[in-house]
Length: 124
Image 1 (cartoon, rainbow, N blue to C red):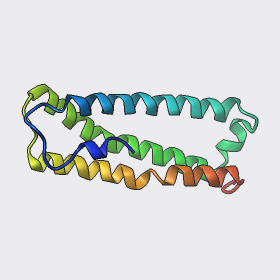
Image 2: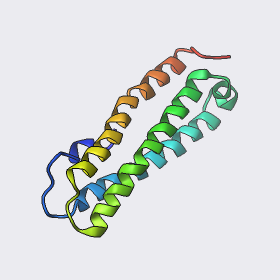
Image 3: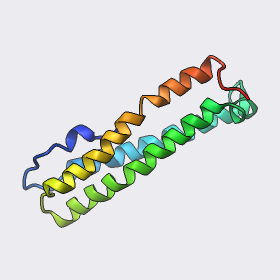
């Protein structure tokens, strides 16, 4: 769930530098979540063997990757808007919002898959 609320339909003439900063922090947090998550999967009590054979673990990883891939076009758009210094067109904002909403739609799957893993479902 990134900065979809900052990407409204109307922008001021000021470049969206704030959106770029927020987007960068979300990227940093996503990287930290991956590092901590894999560290827990490898070094925690259940160990890698448990997670390696859990369908919900791989579904969670796949969802996380999908969200990451969906975040690339808006990030590139935000950077372009900042670089040009001109406000984005309504069509460009609409396109960025579409990707952000797809990310928001996928995000609830992450805790759902985590809860399923915690209850021992998905082991194969």
